[in-house]
Amino acid sequence: MTSGPWKFLASLKLGLGLLILIIILSIIGTLIPQGQAPEFYRQHLRDFSGLILALDFDHLYRSPLFLSLIFLLLLNLLFCSWLRLPAKFRRLRIRDESLLASGQPPAERRDRARLERWLSEDLLQLAAAFKKKGYRVRTTGNEDKKIFLARKSRPGLFGPELVHLGLMIIIAGGLISALFSQRISVALTEGQTEKIPGQTFSLRLDRFTTEYYPDGSVKDWKSLVSVLENGQVKLQKTIEVNHPLKYRRLGFFQMSYGQDWDRTELGLEISLPGVGTRIVNLKAGETREAGDNLMVKAPGFIPDFAVDEAGRAFSRSPEPANPAAMVEIMAGGNQVFVGWVFSRHPEISRYQRSTLPGMKVNLKSFSAPPFSVLEAAYDPGASLVWSGSLLLVLGLLISFYLPYREVRICQRTGQPPLYLVYTRKNPAAFRREVDQLLGLTGQKGSKDKTDE
Image (cartoon, rainbow, N blue to C red):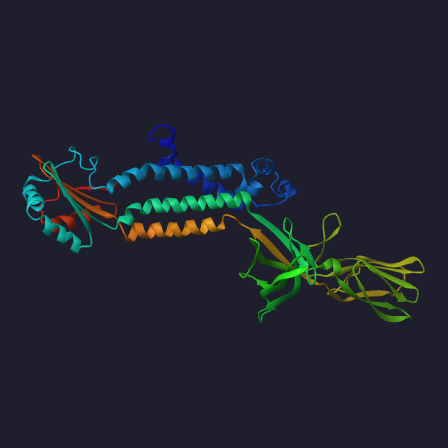
């Protein structure tokens, strides 16, 4: 499995290429608004809407192209680790002919006598010297061959593979999340109960409160909710930012809040010459009798009034920045007033029409019940992502702070000794350290290996 397609799947070039493509697509995903309706892209990204919708870039991180690249990167890491592991396990064996092959360069002639003496006469002293430095020592010998092996920080040998494993688990968790995660938004007013789609329980909002800073900005939202199942309250908890409710593998998070302007209660002040002033309280969409044969109706309410190019009224935002109510007044079956009345700008009358001279209508008060927006999230890959992240950090720590180090000295009968050192971190300094420990005068004969 070291040639052909397997070798290509394990290649560094493929891994780097996939990373570059994933980064480019991720940048594109930050530039293109995600999860919007097709009409949004046709209106705001007219020249690119066809390509965006065809490639599923409106949900880029779940698109077949993005998921395919992620899957290929997962295979690249898997095969890269798989091809490297046999050599790592072979290195742990004291008798490994691939590491002790006769093709390895022998030690310098002036150091051969010293190495031969270590193996033949001072082996116990050599072992003690390395053990004092924290190495684990193993020796073997027979008539044909003698081997001295000293090594420490063996977990560090598999640090890169542990990093790869962590990355693979993170990617697998991300793929599972992208394919099977669920996110459902639930908007509830106080006292309202909503059945959670695909579940056997409902959620009821018992109380919603908003906390403010002294300057008037929002500090926190809190939703006291009850989980109902078969008419019974199974759980009650206050949900706030960073403090979700967990129930049946679902997490309920506080996302935002608002006011239900469709249920706005209005206080209208109606003034008629010779009749006087009266206050009429009614809800948006309601009709109320105001006395003197007057019927008052409020067909609609807009919290932030604005007019588009076609002359149609709309709300620029859900905040009550410019509240206005549509009011219609009938007298004796005839319309005597119709138009928009403004809470903060009662002097505006160009959107009004009245048949009774001197008649004035003011919007004195308005209030709407608040609602809480909760998001129900089910993410089956989250635990894998966290586990992979821990393995990734552990692998990095092991690789940097517990680097594997190995010293091998071997000699076959009638041949000069072989002196091999191996480490991936600062091999030159490690070679000098071992040379000094062995009392060698030269370094050219030592061989440091940094990779298999």
